[in-house]
Length: 341
Image (cartoon, rainbow, N blue to C red; front, side, top):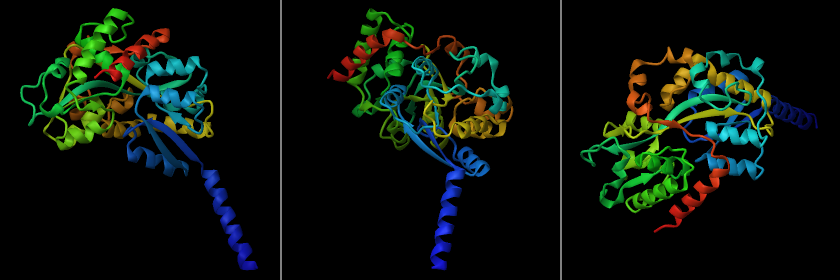
C-alpha cells in the first residue's frame, strides 16, 4: 500500500511539474523557426513548444474564423494583421514584458500597419521571387516572363497563394500588385491561366524539395525557402524579377484565445534577442528587422540575392495591402483561375 501511495505521489508530482512548465502552441509557416531558437527557449523557460503550420494567410484566417483555439503565437503577414485586428481576434501586447522591442528598426515599423505595435511585432522581411535549376534551364532571366516559356515536361510551379500569384501577374503587366481595378484583375487572371497551362501545379511547400531534386526546373517561391535550398545545392539560382516583387513583413501576434499569454510574450521577446535573432536569421534566410541582430550576421548572408534585392528592383516592389471589401473581386478571379483548364 505504501509503495502504491508513493508511486501515485510521484506521478502527481510529475504531472504538476509538466503543468507548471507549460506548453506553448505556435502556428506559423513551415521551416520558419530555427531548431536552436526553439530549443533555447524551451530550456530557458522549462516548457515545450509545439509548432503547427499553415501554407497561406487565407488558410490561417479561415482556421481562426472557424473557431480554432489553443494557439499562443501566430505569424501572419502584415496585411492579414490588419484584418485580424478589425475582427478583434488579437490580444494587446504588454510592452513592459517585451524589452527587446527596442532593437526593432523604426524604418520598418513605419511601413507596417500596426506601427505602434499594439498587437503585432515584425518578425521577418521577405520576398516572393523565382528560382531555376541552372543545369536544366539555360538562359534564365530575372523576369516574370519566365513563366511564358515552355518548360519541358511542365516542370514548373507557381505559389498556391492568391495574393502572390495574381500579384506576380499584375507586376508582369506593369500594374500594382494591390490593384482593385476589375479590368487589370481580369487581365492578370488571363495571364495566370496561360501560365497554369505550362506548370505542374500550384504549390506552397513541395517546390523546395522538387527544385533540389531536379523534379522542378522553375519555381515561384518565398525568398527564405529558396535561400535554404540554394545553400545546399549550387545548381539552384535565385532570380529577382526586374518588374518588381512583393515585399512581405510577417509579424508575431497573440490571439485572444491564447491559453498561455504570458509565456507567449516571453517567446516573442526571446526571438527579438539579438543573438537569437541573428542565428535564426541566418538559418531562415530572411532578414529580421532587428538592428542589433543585423550587426551580428555575416557579410555573406547580407549579400545573398535572396536576402538583399537590387535597389532598382526594390523601388518597383510593393508591400501587400489589406484589400478590404475588394477582396471579393480577387477571390472571384482566383476561383476562375482554379476552375480553368
